[in-house]
Amino acid sequence: MEKELEIRQAVRSDLDSILEIETICFGADSFSRRQLLYLITQAKGIFYVVTDKGKVIAYSSLISNAHTHNLRIYSIAVHPDTRGRKLGQLLMEKAIGFARSYQLKKITLEVNVTNEAAIGLYLKNGFEHIRIINNYYADGSNAYYMYKLIYS
Image (cartoon, rainbow, N blue to C red; front, side, top):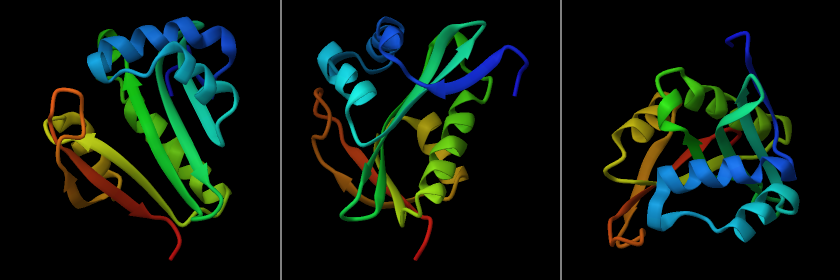
């Protein structure tokens, strides 16, 4: 990891930076300030941020389900100005490590079928396509439902 980079659990004071990245990356599909605050402070799971010299440049929101023993990647986002630094991979490794540490059986996610960079990241990390979810996003585009087995 680059010397200036830090990955840590998000705190309430990160909300403005997270919301900015969320809006840039997801547009009409963005979570609201209220939804992000809930994910940071109350949701079951963990919300990570990557900072560079203290500035939030990427994040991931992970939700765990005690009943199914699964982890859901709600969102991974990297500010466009900081892409190409393998921050998505760093966050993916943290997600897989989190799932392993809590002995969760699998990780699931949805990704836009046109998001080649994200799909490539997920495939590289052992995720498989299960099905297409039609009209998943606000603009009517489809999503792949993907998963990775951690423990069988």
